[in-house]
Length: 195
Ligand code: GTP
Ligand code: MG
Image (cartoon, rainbow, N blue to C red):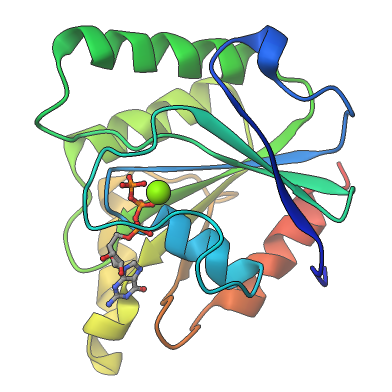
């Protein structure tokens, strides 16, 4: 999909606030600082459209990006940031449960993990949660520019194994710095958005 027009339609917490146009949606989730906003910016060819920051835990709402009146990207707030209170964590979990349970427009989830490290327990729980909802999953291993080329296959198998991925789940290594994986990710999105 070629994207010229992007629009941050709405930041939502409750279902009444979700946009109503009914375009297909792709959600993006991952731990704080994993590179979600950078991935969105790379996919839509903007330098700094989705907010990127070195301050983890910043995005606290579901941010719906309208692409060409055809598709929404939904930036899901990051998990695993130590300075967030238990109460905030529970609020976050409820918001996600509601969204994944109720949102019929949701076509698939891009789940980001840092390709440089073994996925965390929280990453595993997120995948379990997504398997429970039977959603198509693309795992994106981020910041792959930091991994030597001859170590990338190994990084990918560690991700697959640690996250207990199914045959249908896809893994793509990605870099926002050199754009590795960008086209492959778009191909996956273009495919699942039509279902
Ligand atoms: P929150 O919204 O705060 O949860 O973070 P996020 O997941 O949106 O991450 P963000 O895109 O803001 O990136 C976090 C940090 O990682 C920033 O300093 C980015 O510049 C850096 N970063 C993101 N992607 C890459 C990448 O592919 N390669 C490298 N080397 N750094 C990256
Ligand atoms: Mg972000």
